[in-house]
Image (cartoon, rainbow, N blue to C red; front, side, top):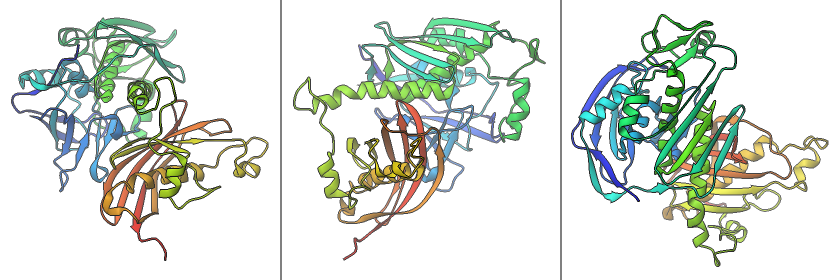
Length: 440
């Protein structure tokens, strides 16, 4: 049964140095209205840009969960704070942050738990959404696996950490998630890294604020210059990280999540699969029959009436979801008969990366044109940045593309796009557009 949403009664703050950026920052929590979610506000930047804590604003960053919002403002290492929000059922907060990263404190979630409990969580009138999968939902990322099994008893987590024959070996824990259990069993577990990884992290510009006091460093025979709070503290910390990432679901999860060797990337991949499953019934209700395929938000004929592109350069087959002019989801089915395969590695056909970017740009154009005052204008691509390619696209693949509006005015638009195949990230990029009059 859905519970009431929660926020806090009073403002509270703490101050500390970020584990990765090494920048001191103050984090202040303030009450927020129902259905507004948790939003970070970068008070150190002139326009105080807002960064919502939801899946649409995730940014791929190594070894931590990061978000990107208005004006490309980013907030890093949010997982410990959001794990407390998940455990306490706090859904709506304004979080003022005077730097790019949440304070690392002692490397655990305990200081954030104490902060939120002292701010006195209170109920609001609106109900919290619930995601309750009816069948197992699983993801695999390299050696990591996660499965969310149906459960009617709230949220439970089972985590297995596996370093093989090396210290700390294999650790496993399983528990039901509630405020009391979280506080006693998970909140105090600290972040950790291998001694061999420490220098690599420094060279990558990470771990600038890490010390032996806030990070467990694992040597060949044990923890260096520190004492464990539990023999299985490493597995406990990973389970706590998982709860922080599950906050991105935007709903309470009724499931038993079983994780093996998972980290942030795999955790967030599971969130994406759970979100797709939760959205499927709503899309099905728009169809003409309960047992028929869901009706697309825009079919191919409607796309042709909006975009000026034509075969073979119209690369969006259909749009399955449009949320105002903030978010759109589109599909590109990759056929072996695509003309570019004739010359692009014909013996081992691979879709050119520039065409994947073009497909995402077309979806972004469809999204921007949803804003009424821009109707009749043409989005012209000005620049592309933060481009990454993660895997090849081959004949038979179906590309699922997502576009999120970051900024939009009468003359300019900025959109973050990502594409996946079978739940695996293919590409992501930031696209900048000029909204121009069509040629006469």
